[in-house]
Image (cartoon, rainbow, N blue to C red; front, side, top):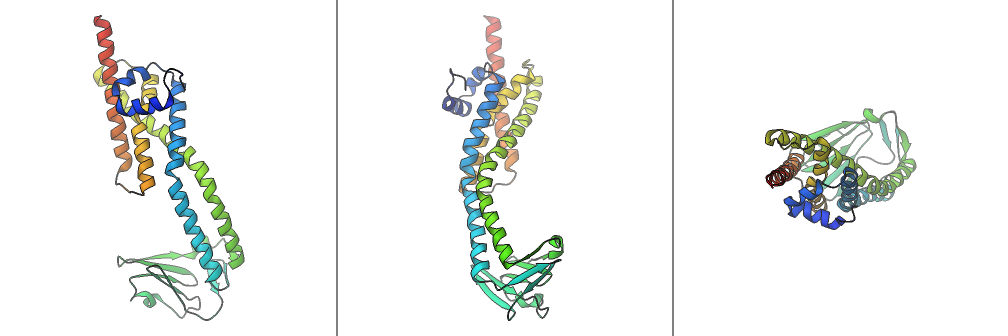
Length: 261
């Protein structure tokens, strides 16, 4: 970080003081990239805590269900075979789960349920409450072969993957923000041309690294709260482009004043 502009000051000024982009324009490109990396890692880590926890909790639920509720089973060449008397009826949350790999049960078994899962020997049906029923055939994973014990071990591996996700997600978040900054710099190139500001592309990308700060923080808040918004990436681009426009405009005004003086 540049010693004359503390990191927290950069975050605040990039959001609250568009005129400060004049100062950002004077800083180095490497400083801007390091800033974007640091912001992405910090807010990326915070934003992915909840999704990672939900993923771990989901895998833990599956683990407990398979260990304590499911009978012995094998899966080979796209065919599921379950031991014991069938059909097996389970009730989990709002879903009624029917398991029958004998071939004696068909789709009519879940017609009277609002939400249900029907697990057959070669396919599964999911009824989500909207009236539609989705079909998934096991043939898409027919290259897999496992039994209950091996499946449980795999779940352990997937649960451990939650911690890998928490580490890797912020890095991927940084890469996505680099691309977002590139998109904003492209918009900045257009604005720069229209306003005839004469700012070099190197500086435009530098400014875009700060202009995406608000979008990065909004993205973090959205993930923490678990809120889904349509066309959110376009909204991020619009917000960041507004900051870019203000940055170019302020730099243009300052340069014009310096020429007059």
